[in-house]
Structure formats: C-alpha cells, structure tokens
Length: 346
Ligand code: PHE
Image 1 (cartoon, rainbow, N blue to C red):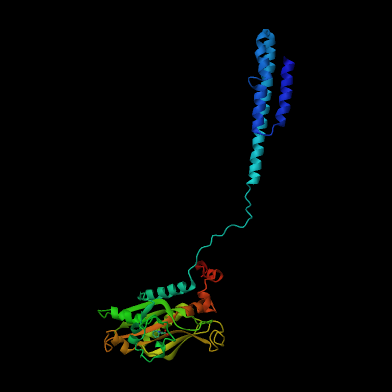
Image 2: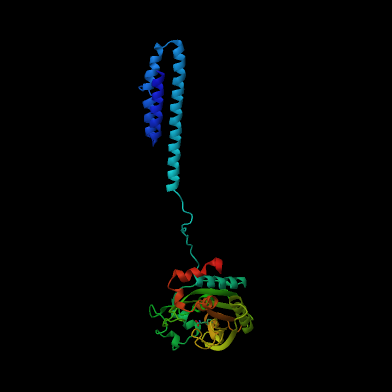
C-alpha cells in the first residue's frame, strides 16, 4: 500500500508539472485526490489493516496527500502569476506616446481688441451700446449732414438693401440713434462697436466688411481739447509710448472741425512700406466736434450743447498691435492664425 501511495505521488507530481492552466490543475486534483481516485481506493482499503499498519500507512497517506495538495497549490499560484504578468505586459501603457492635446478655443483678435477698447472707455465712464447693422439712409447719411449729392451716399460705395435701407457704412449712424433716443437731453458718453460694410475692393488693407468703434460725447462745455486728450490717452493705452500719433485736419460732413488721427507705421517705423503705402503713417480713426446741424437734427440745441465724435477701425488697431499684415487673415478662420491669440500668451 505504501508503494502504491508513493507511486501515486510520483505520478501526480509529474502531471502537476505539466499543467498550464487552472482547468488542468482541477482535473489533476480530482484525478488524484477525488472520490474516485486511486488515492481514495487506498484509503477505503485501510479498514482491513491492523492498527499498526493503519498508523504507518496513515502517516504515508497524509504525507502523500499533503505533498500533492501543496504541489497543486504551488503550481496554481505560479500559473496565476504567469497569467497576470502576461496581462500586464500586453496592457502596458507607453507613456512616451504623444498625448491627445485638448484644443481650447481662443477669442478672435478683433474681439480681443474690441474688448480692450471697451474696457478702456468703460473705465472713463462711457456706456457701451449696440446698434443694427442694417440702418436707414436717414440715420446713416441724412441726419449726419451728408447732403444727397455726397459721394458716400452713392450705391457704388454702400450696400443698399432697399432704396432706403443699407448695410451701415460706418457706426456713425449710432450717433443719430443715441441722440434721438435721449429724450431728456442729458449729457452722455458712449461707444458703439460693431460691423460696418462698404463696397471696397478687398486687398491687404481693405475689406468690404470691417469693424469700427464709434465714440460720442455730448454735453455742455465739451471742447476740442477734451477730444484730443481722450484720443491721446486711447492711443497711448493701445499702442504704447513708442508709437507716434498725429492729428491731420480733415473733412467729415458730420463734424466741424474734423481730423484724421494717424499712428506711425508699425512695420517700417515711418520709412515707408507697402502697409502704409509709403507714407510712414497709418490712419486709425476719424474724429471731430459734432457738427451743429447734426446736433440740431437730433434735437440738441447747438447753442447749449457741444459734442465730439470719433470712429476707430478695429482691424487697423489689431494689425498695429499684433503685426498682422493682411486684413484677410481676420476673416478666413485659419486655425494657424487664430491660435496665436491664445489669451494666456497675450
Ligand atoms: N464715420 C467716419 C468714417 O467711417 C469716422 C468718423 C466718426 C469721423 C466720427 C468723425 C466722427 O470714416
């Protein structure tokens, strides 16, 4: 019996070594230790043995059972470890792979500049108002002292929708709207940013759609020096101390006197280049004292009230600030261009 047990053990241990998965371990376990195994046969024959034999066979059978059980357990453990290692190997994360960069949106440069201008004027007590992009001939021209014969009223220069309605060619229409809306004739300061449209041939510095910020201050004792002081502050805030500014006498039907304000060219620094068309200066805004006719047209007594107004081209300001040489870049939504305006870097 003892030999039988020993041979069961040898056979079992050999088979255990060949097991490569949990199922075969279970098979071997029931084959050698289960109810119908050779081992249990031996055990059931124990009853016929003498007490001494029982004792010694019992010891051997215990030793054999323990040896087989231990071998099974160890092999199972090894198999599981192997499986885990294989899994770890196949699921390995390569931390050197490039990650998926989450792209976030950026504010458009024109939005950035518009907000900067708004912040500046808000800090000086101005209201920011919004107006319609389609407006009447009266608001765009008539009330602004533009005689019917004025070339700017020509359909060649503006986009007319009906005989009387057009895409506003400037934000100055908001001068009329805001004065007419001010029934109590209270002094006020406002800016109106927005899109404007003209029948320009598109090139590096012109676009049929562009944007302006209109400024209008109406009150008593408003003088030209208020206008100059305001615009000087504006220019300094937007372009820094190194850019030069000049006021050039000009003409607008709705202001008297009128000026164009130029800033020295950002590209050539006044030497003359394609951006400034050889002049060294770039016009950024038109301005002047509100024409008495306009005040009167809008219900303000010109002997009591004065005002100043200005219109700034946002694209021009943005180009100066960011060195953009082609105005088309603002409108074609090229991500490579837009991503330069990540707010964190500005
Ligand atoms: N509306 C003028 C333009 O578009 C600019 C301007 C605004 C001039 C206000 C004077 C006063 O060119």
